[in-house]
Amino acid sequence: MLRADDLRFAYPGQRQGYDFSFTAEPGEITAVSGSSGSGKSTLLDLLAGFARPQSGALTLDGASLLPLPPERRPVSLLLQSDNLFDHISAAENVALGLPSGTSRTERDAAVARALAEVGLEGVGPQRASTLSGGQKQRVALARTLLRSRPVLLLDEPFSALDDETRETVRALIARLTAQQGWHTVLVSHHIDDIAAVAQRHYRLVDGRLLPS
Ligand SMILES: Nc1ncnc2c1ncn2[C@@H]1O[C@H](COP(=O)(O)OP(=O)(O)OP(=O)(O)O)[C@@H](O)[C@H]1O
Image 1: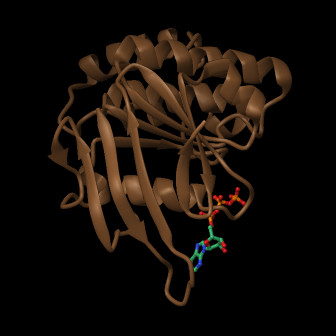
Image 2: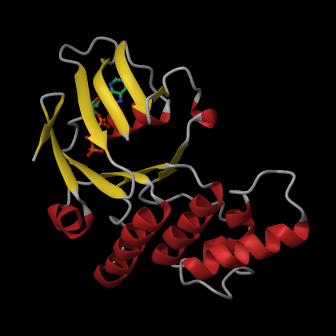
């Protein structure tokens, strides 16, 4: 279980800071909604280690994540867009999820498997800049699969997608979360997306997470 207990944070000069407490179970999507400026991205920054809380606890299966710098946290982050390096191929982007010592044969097989898992067989050689928005999100998810980190943070991951693609990517995230046992935290202000995929929903109001 991913768990935050009174994780407190305030930007310099900010009058009312944040005090976050929540739990996220493995294999489930935990959604956080809130109005613009309510602090959703700040919450993700704290979970990913880009921001340091002033006090409180953040644990995964009982082990504290707070001492870990961002690159050592068991966390992957998927943003609304710009998740890929545009000048290299889809396959090369996916391969970035593998440890650096991986042999070429192993790498090619793992990348092909991951691309097949997200429904993008054959797309590997294409330059990332030529892919559609939905394909880019799926390539980023294929890379996440190879990184196999238990916490997946999603910051408005569907916002740049049309309705049909949105449903495809939503369903894919739901399936992979259940299959991989990820603790997926979905930040969104689209109630439709939350209703479609989330098992748990918190509203971020006045710096706190309220179960919904
Ligand atoms: N580095 C910073 N320094 C000071 N204040 C900041 C900083 N980053 C964000 N803020 C402020 O903190 C508040 C929360 O910002 P945050 O980006 O977390 O909100 P959000 O809910 O993600 O908003 P949106 O839905 O518009 O992306 C806002 O008032 C914002 O102006």
